[in-house]
Structures are given as structure tokens and as C-alpha cells.
Length: 100
Image (cartoon, rainbow, N blue to C red; front, side, top):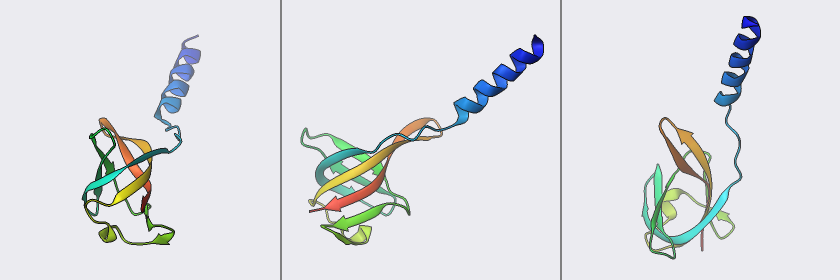
């Protein structure tokens, strides 16, 4: 009985440590700030939304790929982002940033 309980607790612990892949969410707004690691947009409601940027993030202007430094404050952007766990918080990580 004790061994079954231990096995169950180990299985639950292993499953709890796995990350579930969540679908991407789409955000639109005006570019408020940009750096090599973070981008901030102002959405239609006037709220500022921050996104982490990493080496896997694709940055496009139309259909052409550009560098993150090719974006300027005030650009209209659409961001596809995934929610990820980071230490003690959940963050939004940009998967694709498209400037119009």
C-alpha cells in the first residue's frame, strides 16, 4: 500500500512539472517601446502590454523579415504570443511580430 502511494505521488509530481503547450494569442496595437529583449504595445483600450523577445522571435514588415531594430515607436503591429512560465510569474513571449 505504501509503495503504491509513493508511486502515485511520483507520477503526479512528474506530470505537474511538464509544461502544456498553449496556443498562441494575437494582440494588436501601436508600438510603445522596443529593445532587443522586450517589446511594449499600447492596445485599442489604451493598456500597455509587454512581451519578451528571444532568438526564436520572428520580426516581419509585411512579408519581409527584418531585425527588431527595424521597428519604430508608433508602428502598428500585430503580435502572436505564447504564455510561458518564468520562475514565479507568467509572461507573454512574442513568437511573431508583424509591422504594417
